[in-house]
Image (cartoon, rainbow, N blue to C red; front, side, top):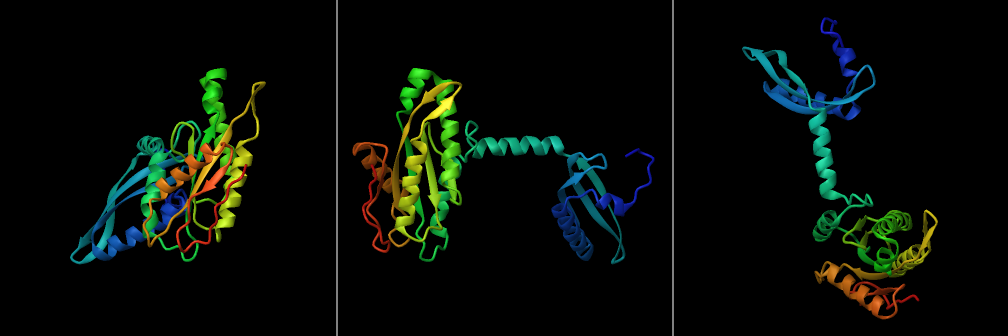
Amino acid sequence: MPHDADLDRGEILKCYSKESLLELARLRTRAIEERSGFTLDAEIVTPKGNTRWIRITATVESEGDVPVRIFGMKLDITTEKMMFDQIRYLAEFDTLTGLPNRAQFQSALRHLPLREFGCNAPALLLIDLDGFKGINDTFGHKAGDECLKETAERLSTACKGAELVARIGGDEFAVLVCGYDSADAVAALAERIVQSLGRFIERDGTRMHVGASVGVAFFDLSLRSDLFGCADSALYKAKTEGKNRFHVHEAPVDVDNRKMDAA
């Protein structure tokens, strides 16, 4: 807006996003009631349609005990906000596949004992690609990266509704599910993963093939079992039995689960 433009509060408020406007109203009302001040990072859309972020710092001025005006400043922090979001993304997501990284995965595991699940036992599926080293050795690391990106896409599609789908290592992935009502349903998901990741991948005329071994384990709150260790043990079992299959770790007492393998 031009510096000499008349300011209309009603028009200015139209620039705020819905969430920022609600928070501004809440903080402003409280500041007036308490004769205090507030700070808010708010998202706005300028009259030209540009999305910006501003930091509002405001103080309520009173005469006696009567609030009469609010004064302060608004600072454009768009660049700062973009830098912070980028740093946070790099800390929480795998830059190659876009999936949550090991840090997010470990955080999810740490919070499992703090949640209420009712009769639905959470399950962890660890996935390790079979034959991935051969892709890198034969076709090069660029082809390997394409293979990992395709794997991430297929895994996300096969595991829609999962609590978390993450890349936790070079060719290692993890899926955390909490809403499945039976061990059979989780086994069906593991089989779907094996089938989905076992299909050929074609990139730039190159046909690549990898398989997937999956280890499954159920979390048991009463026993406080090592969920990752159990799933990793099941994954090792799947690999030693021939790869391209899944294996379910011996179930806790309160989960109706049977040993299930799929060739």
